Image 1 (cartoon, rainbow, N blue to C red):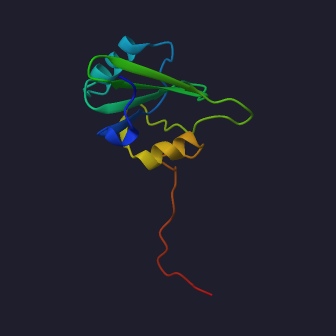
Image 2 (cartoon, rainbow, N blue to C red):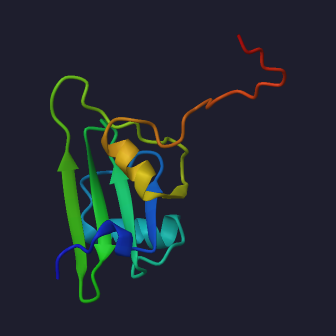
Length: 121
């Protein structure tokens, strides 16, 4: 079976921080279960990124086996804005995934500040 449409998954999880990208399916399943305490057999996609932030891996259970996808970005300035919150796995939306894949931060550091008394001109 091929990867389902993104809308068919219940969750998209991003493993914050760096992951050793030499790991294959079994190593990533171990990280999901032991480090992040999630069920790798759930109807979810799990995303991992290496130290250089030039590529990521996506792991998902397809009902009769795991699928592992690999995406590499090339060219000048090609680097993912991967969240670095160590030892956390965050649930993200499809629009956040699209932002990540186009070079935007999923979790901006500061965001927009609160304006208490706006002045309009």
